[in-house]
Image 1 (spheres, one colour):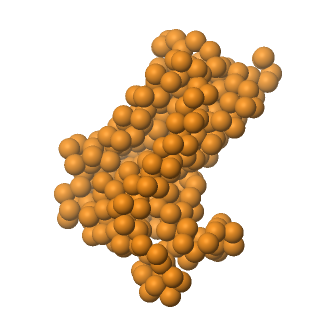
Image 2 (image 1 turned 90 degrees about the vertical axis):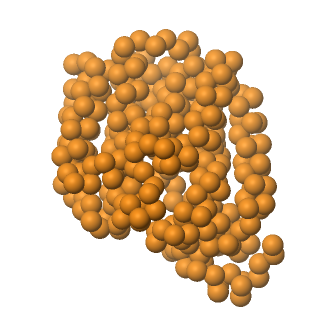
Length: 308
């Protein structure tokens, strides 16, 4: 399918793509034919890249990763997060067309064909395979599990009301891959506590995100934790925040009590500002949640520098 600018302007998806110009300037160096692919890969909304990266960076802070490791995993996160978005849109194409927030996505709006999406996906996965070659043997094995999780996640909302729990394992397995890449991965209770806190963090932020579509999800019988928690969402998420930081304290012990307190208060402040009935507010608060990962990574890096 070859699209000319006039055709693109007549498609509703371009109304969403138009935001790219004002926010991230992709228009200025990307031919207009590439815009649907940028939109498909969510490169105009890099929040997902950071949510994927912070667990990896925490792993490097623990295992003393090099600058090359950070750069390698940054490229990998951009590539594989993009691939995950393509897979998600291929699986949810029909559902996305019926949901107000997602009906402008390239596949749902017929801006791209399924064939084009698969070709784009194959390119992304080829790049991912090149990055995979640089990983240590142990990290390579765990990456296979990560790939299975990535492909399986889009189907979870059809079978369970807790797809966010599955997403927690999917997005945070990078912690284990990063550690296994640099050093020997040992499943201590301390490491498992950190991993559990990251999974709960994912449930926290993605539940907020899911509330943006909760009414459409109920109509379409799409499952999510937002549906489970819809009658008392802030109570649920406050409990998750408490449990999250209880696990985090189990990892940091007394030496990290400041990071635990700051992290807890940060998420509680976001929770206070959150309006579950306002879709735009849900997206805004979701976008701010990634700074929690930055806080915890920064603390780990600080400890690493002070106590090499």
